[in-house]
Each structure stands twice: as structure tokens, then as C-alpha cells.
Length: 300
Ligand SMILES: Nc1ncnc2c1ncn2[C@@H]1O[C@H](COP(=O)(O)OP(=O)(O)O)[C@@H](O)[C@H]1O
Ligand SMILES: [Mg+2]
Image 1 (spheres, rainbow, N blue to C red):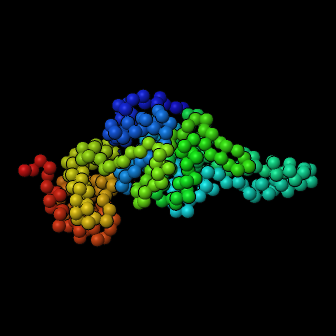
Image 2: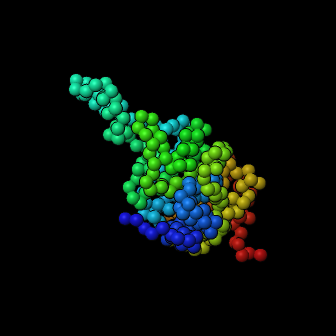
Image 3: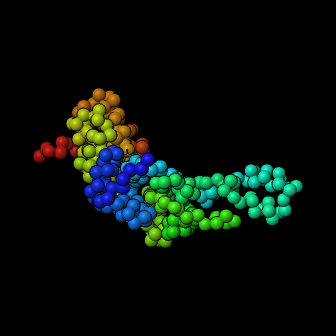
């Protein structure tokens, strides 16, 4: 079951919103082009701005399966691409020993039957209409792994020694993300369309809270988003370890609602700040600012 591919930037904005993802025109343009031109899309931005969620939303819009490759230090092609089922190969070889020549045995060992597909290969072999491949947090992997990805990113194919080259019949829609803990290789960037994802505007964040959490009152939703936006804007000045992401905004609004807070005040902030900040020292850093961040937006 596949859905029609949105055919314009506006159609992408609407389709993403219909599955709960709020994108601005620039982001929707990047998605539209990536799909239309069959180019990988690299999303960079702070943690919690909505990079991973975008890949999921695209998969929902297109009714495609999402295949996820979570990157980490030490990730190699065995975890990313394929692995031979060594035990089954050994067993097969032993069973054939009496009836076949060594060459025949060897030729039969490197077949589909013994190939264990990992995410990249699964995405290349996905049945119609094709998959959405999410290569998440590529900055966590090491440089040899980035080099290994070049063939896939450039030609949407991979080469497996003793087996052959596997090309995608239906180009996977490929989304790469990076939290930018380090710079990615230029060769990777050259093969991708690029989009820098910022935190949403106050109104877009409010829309996200309203859509995701209909149980949260309008007044509280406005106060929470205003507070978080001001906190982010002052993060560098105040010396925050890490600015809260959209997930923290949502979590905080949910927590306050669970505590029956309908009107955000200083004591509610103090009681629940652990939901918003994950670094013990950050509370001391923000405490002097809480009162000003709580001032209503339309106050003089
Ligand atoms: N544009 C958006 N529209 C709706 N929800 C969003 C949006 N961006 C982020 N979110 C929410 O914020 C959470 C964090 O986003 P996530 O994609 O995990 O961030 P990242 O991958 O950039 O660290 C998601 O679970 C999602 O609920
Ligand atoms: Mg993520």
C-alpha cells in the first residue's frame, strides 16, 4: 500500500502536518528535492530539533517502511551492510563434502541464502514502493565508516566481494542526520543535499505542543513554549550545558498538566525543572532568570 508522493513544496508542508510534523517551507523544499531528485538528504542541527522525527514522518506520508541505521563509534560494514552466516556456510560445506568438488562448494557458499542483510542492504532490497533509510547520528561513527558510505550515497549501490554489486531497484529515500559533534567528511556532504535544522519559531513550537498534546491547556502551552524559547535564546549567555529540545518542551508540558498546573509560576518551574534540564548545575545557572522568562509575552 503506497501513498501518492506530494508533488510540490506546499503539498509536502500539508502532508507532513497531516502526520503530525510541522515543517517550514525551507525544510519542505529540501524534502521535496531529495525525493524528486533521488538524492540523500543530510540534516544537521542540535539534539532535539526534529531530525529523526522527520525521517519517520516522511515514511508515514509515503506509507513506506523506515529502515534505521543508528550510528555509533566502531560501527562497521558488518553491522551496517551485510554479514555472511558463517555457521550455516560451514554446515553446508560439510554436507556437500562427499558429493562436490572444492570449487563447486566454494561457489555455492556465497549465495543469497547465506547473506544476512543489515539496514543498508535491507533498504536497497526493499519491495515496492521502496524504503526510507535513516542513517541516524552519523557524527557518532568514525571516518572509515563515512568513507564506506560513499558508494551507497553516490550511486545507491553497494559491492559485496564474492557476491557482486547490488543496485537499488527503487531508490531508497535516504536521510542522514548529524548532531554536529564533529564535522562530517566533505565527500559525504558533496553527495547529499544539505539542510541545517534550527529550533522552531515560538509559534511553530506552540503548534507542535497543541497538536501532540491536546490535553494541555492553551494558556499553559503558550507559557511553556515562551519560557523554553527564552531559555534557549539565553543558553549561551547563561552557560547552559545543553539547550532543551522539542522533546523536553513536550515532556515538560505533559508533566505540568499531570500536576494540574494551568498557569505557570516560579514555584511550578522549581518543582519540575528536572524534566527540562538534565544537568544538575544548569538549575543554578537559570534560577536568577526564571522570573523574567515567565513574564507574559504581551506584557509591556
Ligand atoms: N517539526 C516537528 N513537528 C512535530 N514534532 C516534532 C517536530 N520536531 C520535533 N518534534 C518532536 O520532538 C521530539 C524530538 O525530535 P527528534 O526528531 O528526536 O530530534 P533530533 O533527532 O533532532 O534529536 C520528537 O519525538 C517529536 O515528538
Ligand atoms: Mg535524533
